Image (spheres, rainbow, N blue to C red):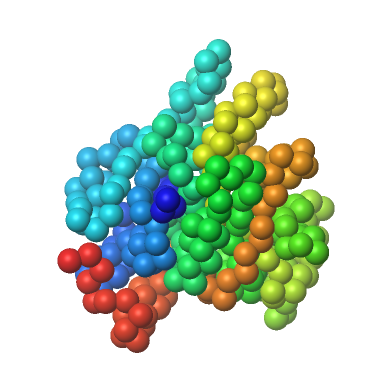
Length: 304
């Protein structure tokens, strides 16, 4: 069974100042996710599922979905603030989405096979999809609790225009993830990659330290676990009163690892990330994509 690619495309792009998902950066107006999808098809993925907001559905169908017709089956799912389990209501003043793992849950009715979750606005490069595609396609039928993440080398994931947020990972002797800690400010200082810790101190780490770029491989029972834990999350008063609390994928993954419910293999990749965290990242990203096209790695027009 071919794996499915789930793209998280519902974010607001607040730091970027617009809808990154729909920004044409390639020579023929290709978006970053067009390149991810092209690479995923080459790596053997058989279906695409987008998680978006309902308010830009029409524009998304017109600008994005049409181009994939005849190339790969694609579906839309919608993330909304009121998509909550029975018995829970969204706080009336909340405007922030419930986070990445809530977005993943929106795909539970359309994904029945092993799947990979990615961000739509990160340029992951081809090796990343080969690595996770191979892992998912080789899982024995009926596998449960055997997950994976692609661990990018942190030195390959920085922006020249400010700090980035990354999940800094630790792993055991079997290359299984033991913890992933979200560090919201990472940058190179005096030549060394460093993150700001809970006390506001900068802590240096090695360039090859694995970090999560939100490339996760799961099997369908992950939705069951997520539904149950989301109820626990919403049952905590602090998560309802804090209008910015979020149900992140690493939160769910850490719980499954700590409970012994799942293992998460950390897959190494040589891929160098780039993306558009900030508006100032855009020109450099356009230039790097053009270089890949000039080198023949991608065609001038991806989906003809």
